[in-house]
Image (cartoon, rainbow, N blue to C red):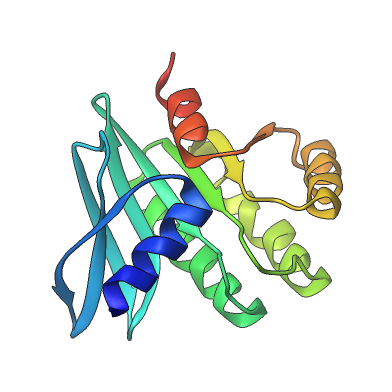
Length: 164
């Protein structure tokens, strides 16, 4: 029953089918039933901070901010920043925003901290923004001097990120 609820929510958010395949630290972990060659997660406690997916021989770092409060969103960003710095190579990045608010506190943190890793961020795709959040993204694109592209689905964003 619990896995059916997770699968239903995932399908609403991403438009993809979901299959629960096991547990990670005692938490049932859904597996995306699509064309990803592999997927791995970084967990802190029971909160999934990051995912890496492999598609068409490319690695995509997924930052899932969905249903997270400001402190959790900052934790997701900080974990991604540390991972990118530790790997020291350009990364394709996909940020998922569903059911949350982009607050001034989060934007100030992002503005201050992204400078250390901006040279290591390849293409940047964003999914799940509301109309107001799209305006924030447009403003961010101006001061960030790099384009973050918005897509309606994870599949569209993944296709964009993996094309040359």
